[in-house]
Length: 170
Image (cartoon, rainbow, N blue to C red; front, top):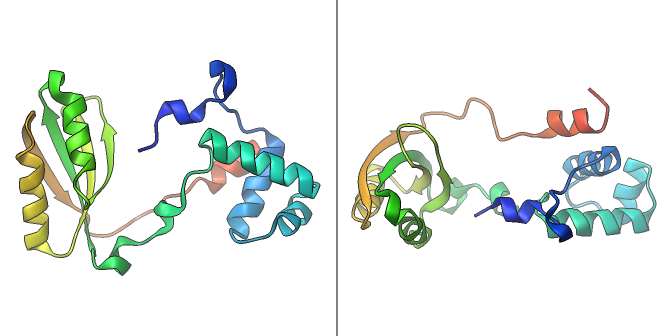
């Protein structure tokens, strides 16, 4: 799970993407498997600068892992659902740990508002989703859940427009 701690470098200061980092990120988004040399040419940077900046961006958590790019449907999990979960506050951490133990739970977000957690889960079919929702509800500390099935993706996960802004291109 991605935490705020991953967004910090030595000294506890948050990593901030500058215009040079943003140009590099745009080159990487355009050619994710590009060599350091190809990325350097595209971003107008030296190969050494690209390697150093990529290492810093990876180490700081700015560049997440590749798991987000893997489509669960290709692994046999075509259904996507979000479960709003209300939790006994004093059991929030153990509930999070228990959710991490459910393979079909792909992300858990702490929320403000009516529910405490938003659980992103994938399932093989409706019966499998029913089983997964039951597993979540059975976790000690979970008071209630509401399940919403994703019918279709309207806007894919994206940050390119924000990176373009950081690069001074928007």
